[in-house]
Length: 272
Image (cartoon, rainbow, N blue to C red; front, side, top):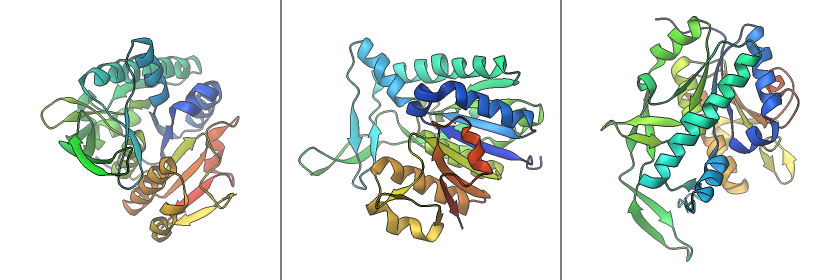
């Protein structure tokens, strides 16, 4: 099967979704009406945390030696993560898109083996005293394979894919995977024209200014100068561009028409 043309992969984090869901959905619907073939990957970690606390659980986060903060997913947390991500949040987004006339289908990365990941047996973290130590990896994974054929078939049938960041492990276990990584790997597999990461800031900020463009070769030098959350986004965008994606953009998901960043001079563009 050939690569589907006009494919755009869009990812929005949970904070942008909570603050601006109606405008994000409207923008996606407008892009769909213009013929864009869209894969929409959603985050939602803050929403998961809220449900965990309501159930008497305290979310746990760890920091890697590279300074990247991530959710630690044990067996109990995985249950809530799957319920919220693949259930409540994914289906709410699908329903809203359909109210705009979009032929939307919601899937997790586990459905049809869309995302296959290797479970992290052990991870190295930096504890509160600044010491490095190894702990069990829990139920988090690193994406190793994307079922591009499945995504292409659904796109060719006119569907907009709404993907929750859950993957199928090598032993058929469910795994929490990073949504930025999921979006980047899907964009690579589909050789997308663009990867658009929507966040709650206007782009990559260095010394108080938004960078309009970042070359792939500049990413390593920028990492110490930006926040840990933006670090991951920038790294994933650079990897996607190196993997054949036309360009990657990090832009605000809080504006009226977030997908306008594809055509207007908004956010930060990551190019070869």
